Amino acid sequence: MALKATIHKVQLQIADMDRHYYADHALTVARHPSETDERMMVRLLAFALNADEALAFGRGVSTTDEPDLWRQDLTGTIDQWIQLGQPDEKAIRRACGRARQVIIYTYSGNGAAIWWEQIAGKLATLDNLTVVDIDPASVQALAALATKGMTLSAIMQDGGVWLTSPDNSVEVHLTVRKSSMAQR
Image: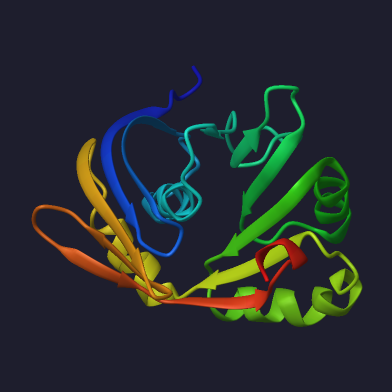
């Protein structure tokens, strides 16, 4: 018998002072049995960092032709493709060809640094690609916030990022490895 996804209900309040985006989102997040709390919380963080009324979660880790998150316009054109982890060069190029902007969030510390060293030169010409590394200590602290029913606030100001629950607050440390032309 196949294992089912664990459903998490999230009330996410976003105050992004850098983008002037302020909204409340009621999210249902399905965590695949093979997905860790760390990865699920990185998905929520990626949602908060790129929040928009049209931003949606992809079908999940078992689907290779969709990103973890994406935003499409009314014509179906992909405005934003957001992927977590360390995709291979071919997958990144394919995403950059399909979307106006591609953002990759890495979160595995030294493994992500080694991946980037090996692939950075091959991706230098992709003007619509952004790669952001999330500090492993931040990821571990985010995982501690995970519950089946979460009430979270995300605050972004002057490049700083904080995710808070009623019981805890996490300052998230990000390192931009590559910035797309669209974000400059």
